[in-house]
Image (cartoon, rainbow, N blue to C red; front, side, top):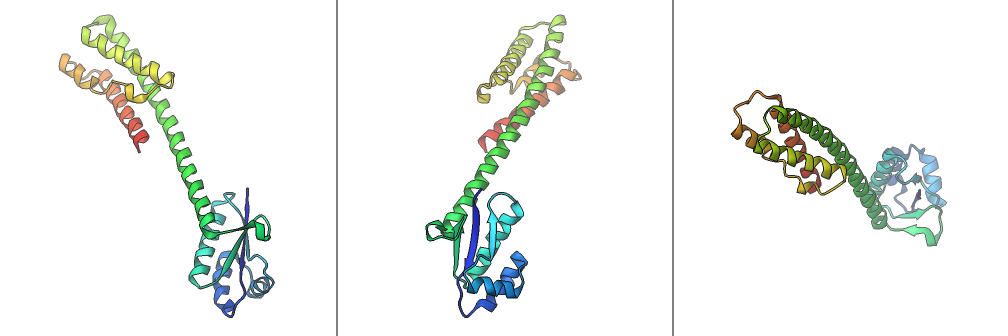
Length: 202
């Protein structure tokens, strides 16, 4: 990981910068003054290693700029070839945060997908038991849709091809067995599918 070093250029307003630097680095006033005069870094931050340190780095830079300080940023070591701009650093933060969001969404998707697969298995099992006593055409159709949905998810297919939505209503229109626990399981499967689709579209 890159280490960013923050150097403050010496000018007549050093005393104005000291409170800002102390708040974000806990360096003493004498040490801060010494480092500024000798062009030494007043902060060294290993990027993306600790969230709190990243926040302090961004806050320090913003507050120093707001106070009128001229700062220089270096990557890994103080050398003219290693100098970076504030915009470059902010872009790195933005890219990192975007990657983190993508990874979190991917983890959420996998969790939701597993929940739906488990729920589809429950429904298929109940539908097959139901078919032993009453294997009507509508029950065969619903069972086929749920089996197809389960097979598609287990093979990492496109969830938008799943067509189980509306199965609860189709069952209720064909049967008067509103107390059947199968309805509750099918409703849960439809709800999980909607949530999964929504997470993909966001």
